[in-house]
Image (cartoon, rainbow, N blue to C red; front, side, top):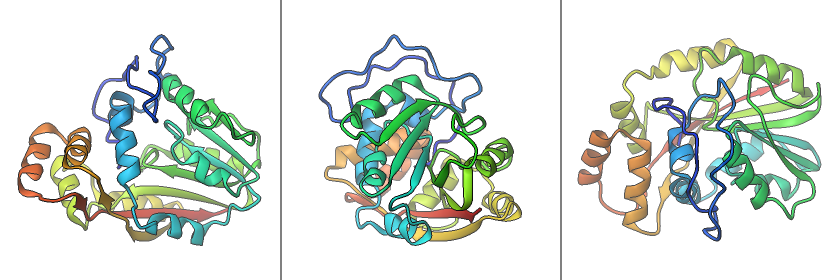
Length: 259
């Protein structure tokens, strides 16, 4: 899900690799100065991996992205790539894929995940200062890494710089106005104003594509662990007490723009 910016910056990682095989390095420098903290993936990398596997079980979100941007044979950037979960999917058909992430520990995990993919590179960087040349990209994807709306204008300016004419940017964001998870999100983060977020993207020339993607877990323990890293404690415990099963209906918006 999205990454509400509510906790102090995390400086060290002790979670296992995404595949559980080896521990991540813990002596790396902290995130880049000015990076907006992502307390779910920064603090709970292994649980966030579980969340990624549970999201979009029927491929509806991927189908929407592919309908809006064709990355076959093109150059792709995953902005805020985290541990690189989505990089191999893009690499299946893209000419080149770059992951940019402000947290060095996550960069290390993303590099390890993609080490056998010669046309994938992962580098430390931020949306406000993408470490790539002008007009070097055809598709930019940012999934729950760039949803904060007002205040992210420097990042939008960077997209204007790095995306080629005819290219497309895709930003995946929560839709708090509908779905079970949307209701949970509103309870957990009442300060988020969906109308203001929509005005921000629309004013900057972006179009909304609504998608019902869903969560589907393989165990109740996994569902509970993910809910607890995504919502404030009191809200998480309350919704878990009233929600049964292993699935959650979950609506998102894909904000997209052609350059």
